[in-house]
Length: 282
Image 1 (cartoon, helix red, strand yellow):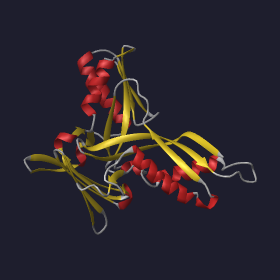
Image 2 (tube, one colour):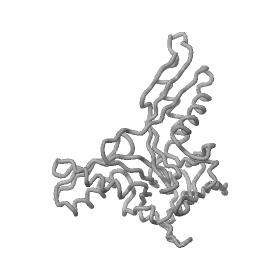
Image 3 (cartoon, one colour):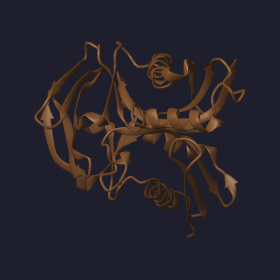
Image 4 (cartoon, one colour):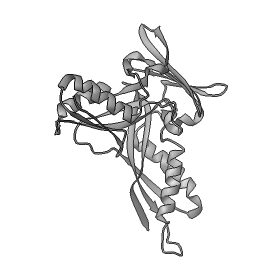
């Protein structure tokens, strides 16, 4: 017998990308659990499945930097307190230093949804082993009609896992100009931020040149530990505020108003089914 739960939870993470260096990602998580019926006539209680699976996902790949441990372009170094990950991509190098919990090492040469499904199936099956159950996981991206982009960031003041310096999202954007949706502006902004690392310029501690390329070094101390990210400047977009979704929506609204002079309403999404609304009237 099988039971299923669609959209049990969702995952917001980043992974190392050969073109962007860092790429944000958001996946919906579906699950099928197979097993014999218990004395209640159930494979397993739905609430227990949700609780166990969500906790495991939250403690593994969600809000982390996902790394293919066997990628020849990746070097992992154990430091005194942290882990350093160095990644050589098509047009530069990334160096990420963080506590171990902020990275997820996957035993493969690349990161794909299928590979992560297999990883999660193995981990969740171990978690449910006492119930003699097996699981199937399906990761799928949100169906978005219109503009969307992927980005990475870190929120040093956040009390939870959003403080990790390189996690990310796949997000849609909706822009209304005098109550009419303007898809051209949506595409324009999505193109500007697609594949970018969005950062508060106060976290920029140093600029360096190496291999004829300018690099930004971002660094901060948060409740989970010390974080540092070195990334090509061309991969970044700097703001004068923390990159919360509320601030991102406001930033878009104010910048676009300079071009249109009309009332704007921005629906900025942070991953799937959540975000912030900012309205600007001239």
